[in-house]
Image: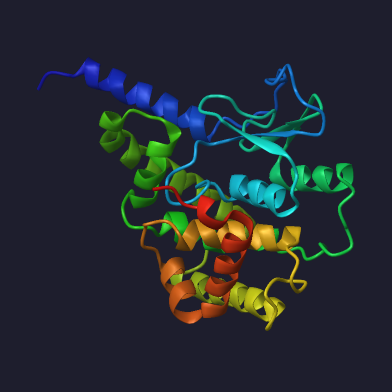
Length: 269
């Protein structure tokens, strides 16, 4: 059988694209992209949005939700090939300064715009690794990536080729990170972990509309971004089924944040 060098070239090219989009995370020097910036306008660099929600990335969605919830003037700058100094998205530019990492971004925004820091000390962000397992690793086939790839601007003709390879690489990378941070457990144990996390979020909310009553905090933005990118995308997953079937309070919470912050802008026709 003849060896197909052209096929090797295609797969190497595809692999390079995937690696660039998802895995190049070395800290590097970056140039300011917005040269003629307006004072106190936040320029938010993130993945292009899909139709079903403002962003597939929970970290991008978290930052945009926070900006809108606090009436901060901002401009979305969709980005395909550029990344932050950490090799990731999102990042922002504010008054000529490059700021990366969603947690750091929120902290800097609260400090710069003198937002109330006393209400936002619930540390829930670190618990989402289990949710990632069921949203990405346990999603059927390459369905999650198939939903994500079109928003990255990749040619539609390449999606059937890119999606399976990207899905395999992403699932492997996420699996390794989860194993190093949490450990290797049977799938049933991870299901228990997921429910315990969801129980915690439900109990923290109680009968309140948001964590601290009627006002949206950074903790609300964090939880919303993770749950919204699970329940509002047209991809079946164990986490989505559990949240929708067993935790109606969390679904209502997401609907409340979605409607208050984004309204009809959340999804596009």
